[in-house]
Length: 522
Image 1 (cartoon, rainbow, N blue to C red):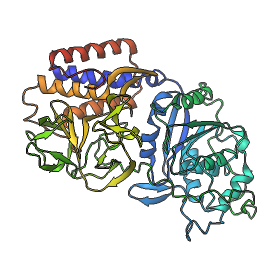
Image 2 (image 1 turned 90 degrees about the horizontal axis):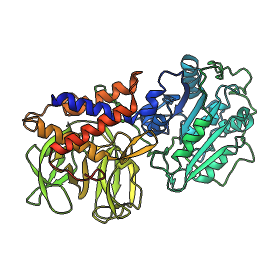
Image 3 (image 1 turned 90 degrees about the vertical axis):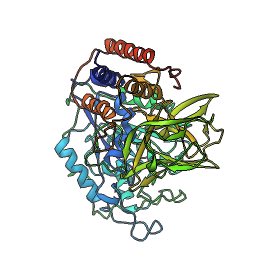
Image 4 (image 1 turned 45 degrees about the vertical axis):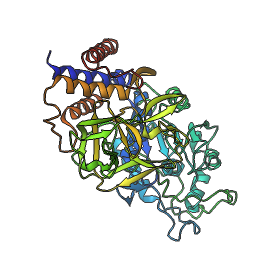
């Protein structure tokens, strides 16, 4: 059997079933949802945050927009800060006209839209935009971590005057651990709508809920209940005619005396921890931006106990791979890109700081079990394999830091004192999700099985490593390009037979290679 085709089929099948229900609905006419990113984010960062919801809802087409104001480093704003700072709110009701015009153009050219969805500053902009278009331009609204624009009283006056926007159904989500936008502020925004559905996640922070959030099913269920499957029959006109709305320069947009004055003021450039990802011109287009791993300045430990920077590692170098003190040779690099601009998750404990991409896996102690979880879902208080607790977590931008992902025989490596996987997740989850079912196959196990098959069956894999222009090892890029093709083409696959093929290939490869442990953690 030609192993190249076997592995290609494996990658193709795994990513196909991952997307299961979405592919089955690809022939239907989809209702469009207009998505607004958080402050200093962009369309790509928003797509990253919403990916689990998008994958769970094939009946919708998600369209991602950029705000009108460039905030630098690839990010955008929907609303600029007041010129004099938060202490001097703007009174101009036309303060956000540029962003309103951006959305008007998208609605006119790509509409009709069934819904509008926003996160953080994008959520705050949802009622701003609804106040400037005709009732019925959108049929549903969904907001995550929203608030009212209290530092722009001109905008707020129009928002309050136009409320409740034709009594549009509104889903309001907030996380009790949100340290950026208080839940009370989100509830104040919800009060501008009629009978909004409010979902509160006890474990959620300032984020769009993913599959691991306990309220994720509620969010999806609400959107399913409010979906339309009969094409554009129930959709409004694609033109956001504002002839019946308040003029942006109307003097009636004075601040409302009843607007909360005791709420903590929030800068309307939004949350600094929302992903702000600039796509690389030559990168492979995949569902997860910034496919990478560690920066070039990340530290690993050699056999003699000295530290080495990630960018100085070579194939054949021995590095520490676990808490047991074992050292193994670097067999290859999944990613080797000396210069790259990237957003990373910065995780701190009392003794160390680790930076890695959102999709990269690290080892945590969860309910006395060790599991490799994506950096994006790590929470403050989580315990690393070393026994140390996470005391802070934030997103940071790294310019020219490079991207490196060393592979070892065990598929693990200790970086800045933290045990990490060599691999990434494609679903922002620890385990492969097939529709609503969580499989027993961890993404660490899937990645390690795939890589071990190449090391075992292809002679010279470690000696003749080739990379794409983006620094991704070629056989990894094959899997990612297949994933992109599957995600973008209207192709039907018979799901159950494909599942059996995947299971058969995984078991076959596992039996023919060195045992690599259980499905859950290996």
